Length: 371
Image (tube, rainbow, N blue to C red; front, side):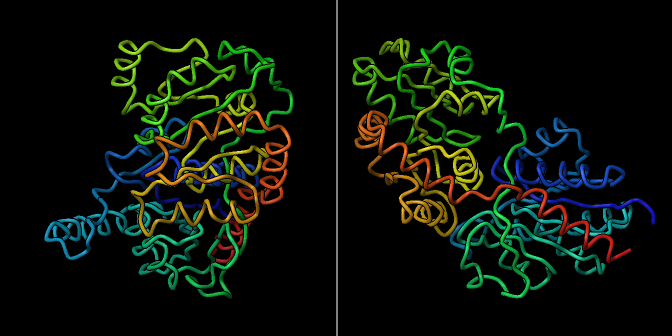
């Protein structure tokens, strides 16, 4: 049998890109000779992150729909979709994939529609508890649908669903890493309670403003904070801290490359409720306060967060209430050791341990079946 050839498409945010790369890595572990090509959206972060992970990527001139859907600007979006679909077909004919994988995001819509029309079997991976528009429209064209939450038959045909969980970034589970070592990397004391604040790969304005509004309380506390602001907000936050004064117990950075170290140093995590972030928190058994983004389709981050809150596996603060409630609640929670332990243990019970490998096996099965 000749080498397997696999297309993986999607992106836009780290929440789509990290699982996609994890699936590709798992495919290579199982089938070292497999050829994997990514298809993304021009100008989006996958065009940098995927090559950095060691994979080739083709960019499409595709962009997202404007809300509400009847906006006149969507005429241009539709024209770009048709261009992208033509380019995707050209790429598919040249690459000759045995299977096409969609992980959500603009590019996967054009790519998997093109693959379906060319008779290439498709698999989609839905990370959220509320299915996105792209995956809902692709569902009838996919032979397998890998999901991270129970009850997804309200969006997809039940007989095609496989409950796999979400793949997380490789390297997060380093058993040799200690809290003492990790704390030292951030210039922190290992014995003091530590809160990690992350707003996703692009940052989160509300979470950042919550920190800036509570600098006085942070400075007076015996709690340490690691704060990833996101590159988009870093400059203005630096300027604000110069004016107001940066507390000594607050470590500030635009981006954390080694999230394994940050997670290990933290006793409590403040995070948006993106699917990838939640999967990482569960796998690591980390207590968390989730602040769902209000700027996502169908408010799916609130659905993600509530899946944990209902099982006492996380706390949730609404975005509109975060500026006043978030930091005080974090300080109160990180000091309550039994509460932290309960949240962490319940989160770990919700984790899926081998998601990338399980999805990779399904992709390989489809690819071999198409040979």
